[in-house]
Every structure is written in structure tokens, then in C-alpha cells.
Length: 457
Image 1 (spheres, helix red, strand yellow):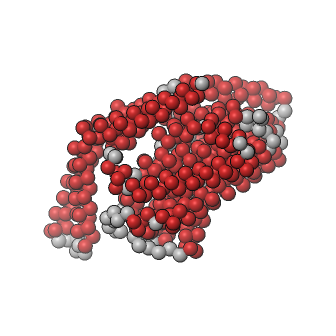
Image 2: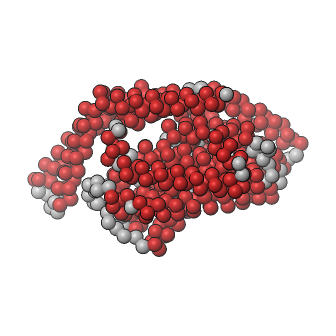
Image 3: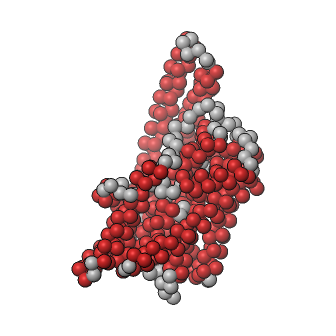
């Protein structure tokens, strides 16, 4: 009963947020949005003229540079005023997300240590890890391939007819580094305290695996540690219950801020792209549920019903991390063994982001279509494999998907400036991606539990 009430309140908050955001956009924010739009158009015109000037010593160059600085200052001023007007709504979601982040790191550590210590020998840990990674790699490949297939079917880049940014301009988005050194430093912690402080889930998982195996190996002395960690995990789950009470307020604040900032007008401009992407996500949902159905049978549908409020929270706040403690609780109630849940779920948050994977191929090929760049099947396949490698372990980076896309499209001579087409609508797309990531990770955990014979009725 409690769960259905929470889902209802979250849904009401979602609808109320859209209405409040629209009214706030029209009556309060509109003036500043218009000023920002004018400033952006002016900056684009100045940049285009600057690119054409080959001699930087002429007076016109210095004049244009000065004008650009002035326009940038106007844009920044209006942007600051707009954010100040929205701060009341943003604070609601900020408080909730901060409370969730406060919980996630200790929850991952304590539950994983207990889980691994109870599994016992390192061989069993390796077996569960192998099955988990098999599902993750398969799901990643399917998500990327589905994105590639559907963007080629819909061809949104050819049908949108939105003016393209100048290919010489930069978007200011840093590119994801594809170096092995960076990947290793992201996975292995140099300090456990630093990993906890920065909420580096993957690094916490690595330390917790060592800690859990060592705790199990020392036998009777380790029992004290396991009992203590188990008690702490239950305390944190109790705190989660309290934090969830403010979820509807956070949802209302997050949605109101997004709609007030972007306006419903952006939906009409990008209606084709947004519609086709969300349709693609629904197809991916069906594929994930069908794959789960093969292993779990009808219980796959029961699981989807159980995690719907967690998906709504992830959708509204644009972050799957916000739903982590809730999914952990629901999976254990569903019948999954806590040692499997605490092992598979944290790994999934770095290696199994199905919604984000689909978006990467979908958005990259959309940009290629927008610029009229034809990529052969072989090139698209290469892009898919590159994205599969570059995307791992980058979940904690803000606008992570755009960062990875920026690093990948340059390899295929697609102008990075095209990302300007996506920056404006990325928060709206991120909502769908986050909800899909939650579904994918919950299903993966339930399937691995079933494979291990650890799923209770």
C-alpha cells in the first residue's frame, strides 16, 4: 500500500511540475530566455564573421572580439538571473539528491562486504562476476546495436531541418579520454576515503571486494565484521525510507526547473528527434523485459511493477543514482539474495547503462545525418565498438553521454559543434535514459540471482 501511495504522489508531483514549469516559463522566465536566445544568435553571427577573417591584425577583428565579450557578458547576466529565479525549485531536488548521495557510498560498501563475505570463496565471487559481466556485455551490445538500427530507420538528422552550428566552433564539452591509464585510475582506488568522498562507485566496489573476500577468509573473527556491516546496512536502508518521503517534492522541483528553463517550445522544435528517441527507448524496454521473461517468466513483469516508482524518481531527477537505494530494497523484497544484489547492482551502475548506450549510437549517427556525412556499415560498426570501450566506468561524470560522444565523433570527422543541437534538449533525453538504466540494472540483478539459484519465490 505504501509503495503504491508513493508512486501516486510522485506521478502527481510530475504532472504538477510540468504545469507549474510551463506557467513559470511564460510569466517569469520568458524575458530572460528571449535575451539569452538573442545573445546566442548574436554570438553565432560574430563567430561566423571571425572565422572568415584570416588577418587578426585588422580593426574589424578587434571590434568583433570586443562585441563578442559584451554579448557573452549579457548572456551570462541573463543566465544568472534566470537561475536565481529557479533556485527555489532547484533546491528541492538538490536536497534530495544530496541525501541520496550521502547514502549510496556507505550502502554499496556495507552491503557488498556482507554479500562477498557470505559468498565465501573467491571462486564463487568469480563465477557470479563472470555471469554478471556476460549479461552486461550482451545488454550493452544490444543497446548500442538497437540505437544504430533505429537511427538508420528513422533518419531524424535528415528530416529535422534545424540550422546547423558552424563546424569550426567549439561547444566547450571536454572529450572523453580513451587511454588505458585513465580507465585504470578510474577503476582502482588510491585511497578508500577519497573514493567514498567522491562517490566513485566502481572504486568502492573494488575495495569492498578485497575487504569482503579477506573478511570471509579469516573465519570466525570475520563474523563480528559481517554482523556489524549487516547492522550498518540495515540502518542505512532505514534512513533510505525516511529520505524517500521527500521524493515527490524533489520530483516536483526538478521537473518545474527543467520545463521553466527549456519551455514547452523546445518540444515542438525537436518533436521528431525526441519522439523517435523515446520510441526507441520503449523498444529497448521491451527487449530488456523479454530477455528477463526468458529467464524469470512472469516474475519479470512483477519486477517491473515493483520498481516503477524507482524508475519515476530516476526519470524526474535525470539520474539513476537517485533510485539506487530504492532498487536495492525492492530487489531484496522481490526475492533476490542480498549477496547477489549488493554485488551485481553497484557494478551495473558503471558497466550496464542500457539507456545511455542506446543514446550514444543514436545521437552520434543523428549528428552525422545532420551534417550529411555518410558512414558505411563498417564505419558504424567501428563506432559501436569504440563507444562500447569509451563508455565504461564514466557514469559519475556530469553529462557523461555527451562527453563520450564528443570524444567519439571526432574520430569519424563529424564536427564537434553539432553537439550544440543536443545540449539544449539533453536534460529531457537524460530523463528517459536514467529510467532505462534503472530497468536494465534491476533486470540484470534478478536474472543473475535466478542463474545462481538464489531467487526466492
